[in-house]
Image 1 (tube, rainbow, N blue to C red):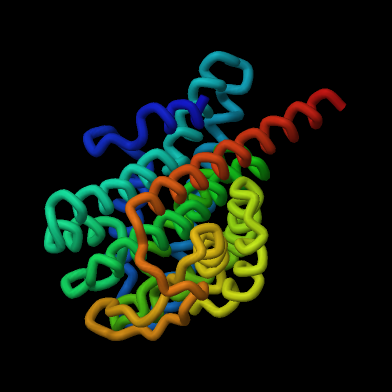
Image 2: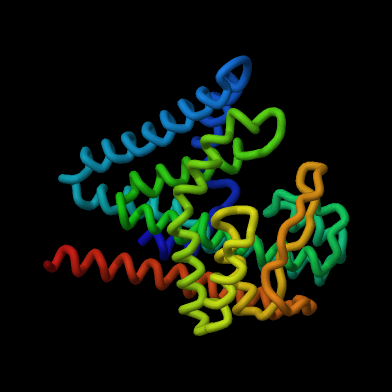
Length: 301
């Protein structure tokens, strides 16, 4: 039910969303704890408390609803919907390509700036398209496969605890004066949480695309990325599209040298985003079907 809701509705901007609540809680804790001595320890304490709190709240609600089957199903279906971001991820990627093509370079730079952390003010059309495709592949793990992976392990409580981890990393996991020490634990926790899902995502992408090159790319180029996880789905998509990602980019005023992922330094075409969208849809559906089949086998045996 949650998968179908995400496929149909996405995440409308005007709807309430638990991630906004998570973000407010993180901001509240960071404002009060991120200063003075022991910033790493205080950041670690905040991270552990927030993740544990989210898990326990959703676990408690599920225990309470367990004997009210209709409410139990509705509640969990709704939060699976909130935990998935496949529809919005694909829509944002497609929109970058459309805006760049229809409204020009400056509009394309602003549009891609909505979904990436790098400085977009000097990006070329090729770099804009690459940034959008990189985001679609990397966030296929963070926003789709990883939440479903933790749903398979621990239901909605596990899924929402993962979303808290991922939200903390996006808010605190920066290497600058403000967050370097306070957010380090949250960033490392996110790395650990995504270790298996990132590699699973890459394998599923290669499987649904039927691409042997994607398999070879994820083993060859995946480990080269600065991130311990992001390189794997990016490498898989580079193999599927037979293109090249990566290279130097500007983040928060600093040039960051990122290794190239892939071999063919070709011009990215508008049709490439359609291929990436199809891969994302098929990967998400495959993950949902795997969990459904596994659940049926578990309950029948």
